[in-house]
Amino acid sequence: MRVASFTVAFVLAIASAADAQRPGPIPRFAADVRGFYSSLGQDPITAENLGVEAFRLPNRGPGGVIDAHMYMLRSRTFAFGVGVELMAQRGSAQPKDETGAAAGPSIQQRVRGVAPQISLNFGTYDGWSYVTAGMGPMTFATYFDPAPSQAPPSKMTINLGGGARWFFSNHLAFTVDARFYQTKPEVQTEFYPGRQRTRLLVLSAGIGIR
Image (cartoon, rainbow, N blue to C red):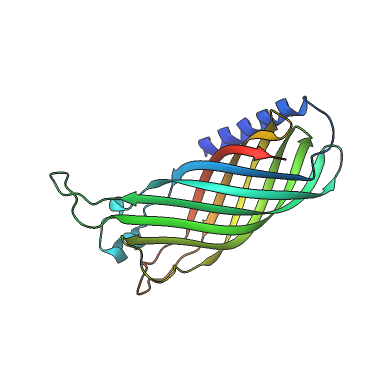
């Protein structure tokens, strides 16, 4: 929670500084490309189904987000937006024996999701903060390399978050975002292990355009 609180305070400070640059309404369109390196968790149910200890699962991994918003209703310092977000993350861990040598196939964790979004935006043309919510299909798959031939199960997943955009040129912005994904539990299948309900926290930063 300390990390999340710091992030919220940071993005609001950025938006406040950007507000002073150029008054005027938030533009009609903005899009972001952001990167992150966040926790994937080490689910005990997943580990048990795979026949490994939970600490053997990859705990963190790199990922990326692409999102785009259209701002349908705008006033001088507020806009209501609709958009879409694509998110992907991966992690990998290689089992090793007591000598440090590879002892079996690597374990992979993969997250993929796409979700329509709505947003409430507060600020002006060159800088604004926002809160968003969305829901869409997401897969969270764990498996021994190579990947199974069957696609992983997909569940409708809620995400909630907020962030800010700070435009340092006419078209480019620095963006930050903090978001929770509330994944749903999975039952074990022939190809994939089960999973308990999980809340993923993703803190990302990148470049935006308008």
